[in-house]
Figure: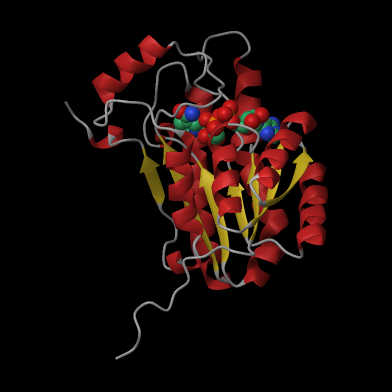
Amino acid sequence: MEPIRKLSRSIRGKVALITGAASGMGRATAHVFAGEGAKVAVLDLRQERVDAVVAEIKAEGGEAHGWALDVADAEGIIRVVKEIEARFGGLDILVNNAGLSTFCGIAEEGYEESWARALDVMLTAHMRFARAALPSLKKSGEGRIVNVASTEGFGATPGNSTYVAAKHGVIGLTRALAVELGREGVTCNCICPGPIRTGITADIPDEHKEIFAKRRVPLRRYGEPEEVAHVTLSVVLPASSYLNGVAIPVDGGMLVKNA
Ligand code: NAI
């Protein structure tokens, strides 16, 4: 009989770029990947926050290097991806995670700015990183793109249309890249977190978080960044080679709860 357990569950030695890795789910993903032996490119807006995460990872014996970049900077993306490839000798895993809250009612002042920022940072950047990384991802043989969308990629919260449009777009982009890049040996999938305790949700008072979670989430609590990072890890494993084009909710069951 052919052996069943021939696929690898290790990302040791793989090069992974994680955007928005100075906080929340990006930081947790950087830690989890580095803990598994991956070489991690930590990318975020400000150098000192990037350096702090790189130092944390190194203190735990992991391998990481940091890049400060606004992901809305198209030329910067091309430059940084080249630098990462040069430093680590390739790029196998891209996690498009950087994001921000862009809450703004459709009739409110500043809507156009909110729209532009939401799409630049949370959709156009995903496309640009995928394009810049594509030659390396193809060369990898086990190239993985993971885009972070949201449960707002399936439904909508009033007053959040710029974010909702970007996140719906991320799911569409994920599906489109999955069907286009499958033949190149690169998979593209999407993680859709529900309410998670991170920088984005830090301003929501604890009692509001609790009321919301008890009403909406079967697990009756917010999720922790690490709980999402482990799902992302499972998606990028070499053994997850037949997973392509899916949008995976990581929401404590929120999306399937009716009453
Ligand atoms: P976070 O605020 O803790 O982390 C986001 C990181 O992205 C920050 O470090 C921030 O500096 C970085 N970032 C923002 N704009 C950037 C830019 N222009 N260039 C480079 N880096 C930038 O928040 P969280 O929650 O960890 O966010 C990660 C992703 O998860 C985002 O895409 C967010 O939309 C998504 N998400 C979060 C949910 C939550 O409940 N926390 C729910 C669903 C999705």
